[in-house]
Image 1 (spheres, helix red, strand yellow):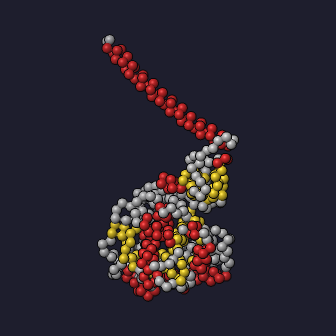
Image 2: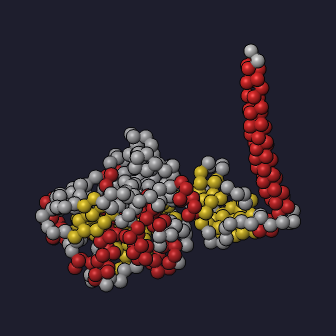
Image 3: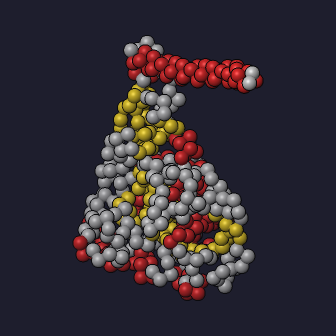
Length: 422
């Protein structure tokens, strides 16, 4: 019986010091964290009284992700002013109802754009498996190839079609083999006498006659699918870059658009001549915030966690009109070779552009919608939408080939002012 109390005493002798050490460490940690927060608060208060300086890791010209609390969103903004004496930083938003705002700097409120991309988006995720087509799937010709997201893709394009046409902008229009009437409407209107190509996938037999007759088609040797249009857009950039290198082309920009868009190319050419070149490296109608992927399988733009596990997309230009400078094209055609595939083509372009250090420039000259956001070629709202190109360079959601022609007529009638909107 004497052993039981003895064992209990030894238990307390061993456990008690361990418990005291744990409580001491916990108390010390809490005091340390409390002291760090108090020191930070003291610095901020002293800074506001003009007694100290809070070092801010940002300078004028930096791009940052700002947590806009009233909208619960992370918005892309550029630092246009830093006032160390007032602990304030002035931000100019890429696109927002608040164009410019001065805010008190707080650690955690702002993140460097590159750090934000690394932390919250899939910008620097790479593809992991090389995929190569060992034979032409749909075609009967010996196509050339380029690589997108570890996948080797063959294409056919007539080199002679890139030479001798006017304009410094090469345009790629995503289309499908059955949209011949839409292509003809574009050929007869805004694409006349310009370097415009239609990018089409699917069966070679469905397109070969038109390919040889019009010589303005870039054929992509793969299945035609909404979920694969990233490959079509990327291959357009690859083909232009390849042809420019081989043929010594002197172009300045490329524009990717769709066959239900009207493009006032003359206005775009004027913009390129007038605008600061750095604003046109990656230009269009931009989403300024870090948009969350759609996780509902029923959504048209659904993105699975397997394909894109990150919680946010980087800020991007919508696919209705993506303008890239030549130097941007030369860079993204390299970065897209190893970038992880994403079936959101406009987000994918943002990802490969961000790898090159380019931030989107927003422009209201690109109109993504009509009067009704739901009006498009598949709706019955054709007779209710205004036809106007006033202060517009690109109008998306053209409703029919006839609507394309109507917009072409309106270009001459409707005024356009470069300083009206940016």
